[in-house]
Amino acid sequence: MSGRDAAPGARTAGPHVPDLTEGDGDEPAGRQGGTGWVPVDRLLRRHSLRQSVACYRRHAVAPGRTRWTPGRVAAVGIGATLRLALLAGLGLGGWLCTRHFPGLGLVAGLLVCAFAVALWPRRPRVSRYATAVDAAAAPHLHRLTQRIAAAVGVAEPHLIHLDDGFHAQALIWGPLRRRHLVIGIPLLAALSPEQRVALLALHLARFRVTDPATEPLAGGVDTTIDTLDAALSLGSHGIQRNIRDTRIIEATLGTPRAVAPGTSGLVWVAEMLLIPVTAPLRGLLGALWLLYTITVRPATHAAGYAADAVATTVAGTAATLDVLDIMISADAVTTRLGALARTRTSPAAWPAAAADFLADTERRHRLREAGARRETSAFSTQPPLGLRAMMLASRSPAPATQDLDDAASQGIDAELATYYRKVSRDLAHGASLT
Image 1 (cartoon, rainbow, N blue to C red):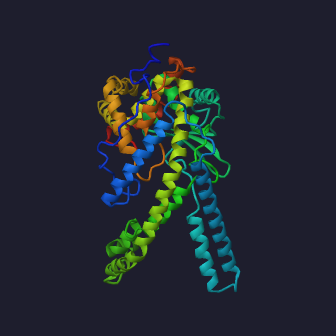
Image 2: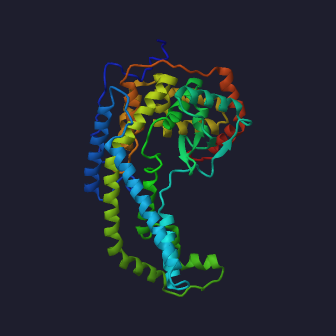
Image 3: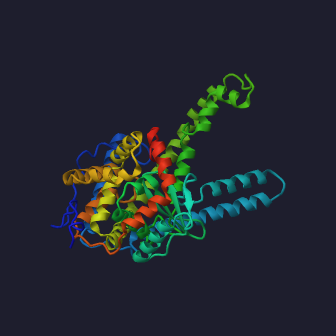
């Protein structure tokens, strides 16, 4: 086994059980972090940490299997029930529209139909700011993707997209379940050739495993709950803030004093009167979402660990760990890339800058545990990057079966040189990589 495969960040003595209980009171606010009530959030987060560690221990020795677990069955059942209920709502709306047409039933039917359409589960879609690149524009990137997809055991993505974020995503979207691979230009530019193989393997492997978040009947439930929560969160939308401020309405209409005085106060009073109604509904919605998260989390963690195990058989443990640790250190790495961009340093120097963060082995271990604590919350279902890295580091290192030579890597850089310059210019002007 080569020295490259025996990564400095890997531990092979046995499964390392992380201690995520330290600092568990630092819970981010909001729906992703908790309910907003500190004592309740701390209890929920402790439970989430314990459940995440339990999933880690369950899959620490052998890769997670994605068979029909209770969590997966529950996710499919909940998603199917929700879709059937919304289809029934569409049917009810259509019946109301045609009953005694035309009449007041038409208005009620249209409202019911609009409500069902707005709440229909939707999976994450590709950002509108991402740019699709075909094989003619990036032949080296497409050939590498095809080769890694064949090694992973999945069909190649239908489309490859590039954006300016320090991330990568594997998405299944649309009624035809088309596969989309989104690659962040800054992340790709900061990786060495073997790490680029690992990045593609990590995300292409997500198409091979069964994740409740991407299943036809189970995916998209979180978007329905978020839509309901946003509708019940008074004062959280820009349009509601605009209604409160009559000056915004007058500026939009272009006619001063077009809004009656006191309109802003009436909106505030209406919101105060609705709070006793919306607060219990939000509490019930949060309880349902929490129950769904607790039920589905073991299945999503198993899928994530299984995909990582598949990636190591293609790219090797060392390169896969490097990619995960770079993504964990995203804030520090992007800050360093921004400093290089401001000095007009070529993006060719970015891989060396990212490699500096991988030299300190103990720092990598600390960042993994800190990242696992930071990313674990009461309403999160995916395994944190820190736990994923610790999982791979606890197993015996695997050699890489696929590689990328320097000539092909330089060919990718030449194809994407225009995107590199754009991202470098944005970083030099202080743009954040989201």
